[in-house]
Image 1 (cartoon, helix red, strand yellow):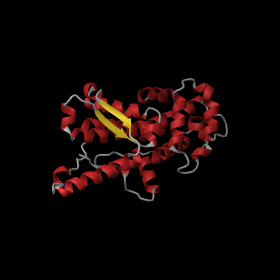
Image 2 (cartoon, one colour):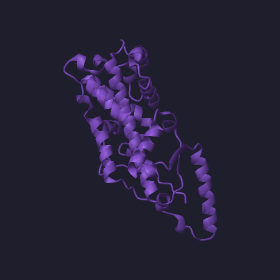
Image 3 (cartoon, one colour):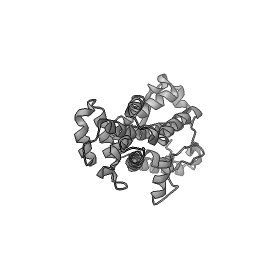
Image 4 (spheres, one colour):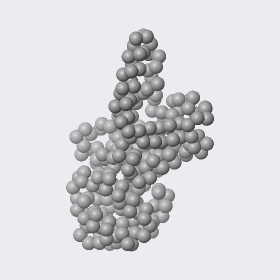
Length: 271
């Protein structure tokens, strides 16, 4: 069976909590209120979400010393949509190298800072990137889990559950594949999670379209089209919504975090 869920069209606040940053991005978009789920998960939007959060943290704080980058906006964060998801991924990958002190100048130069940022600025900005990307991975896993649950045969047998994914965010963003798989393991348990394989599937749109055309032609000839058409409902478990809401809460309250030690401790739980 082949199903086109158009999952990117899902999303309203009755079950998908949004932050003020999501609303800012949505309101500035040419199609506000449309494809809200995609605006929280797609590589077309994650960089801008990160920029919006960073701008608020830069401007918050009673003293300039409390503010991200001492209250000065780096040139790469000045203009809407200029800070891309690929840039966001590069910054997060720099954080994986461990010795941030040796990378401060390089990161500051990459972002277009007027002066070298403090190491706590770098940590805070990396954590913002991590919060946004972890939430995207969590939401992506939620949609995959909803589809898997509509196919009980997949869960009852012991064979592999293979998921083909395409797109530069999945392929190139640091840890995205591992984060999605980790969330699926939390949802289904380690035993079922170990059977889930997430692999890159290039040209999925064209190959899928060809398969659908072939199946339609075959079924249409036999007059049995209805027997293989179905659309699974969006089925988020309550416990998983709490996970999403927790990440949303971290994003919403980010501007109140002014000290790097607290931010550093948050980093450990989100990597």
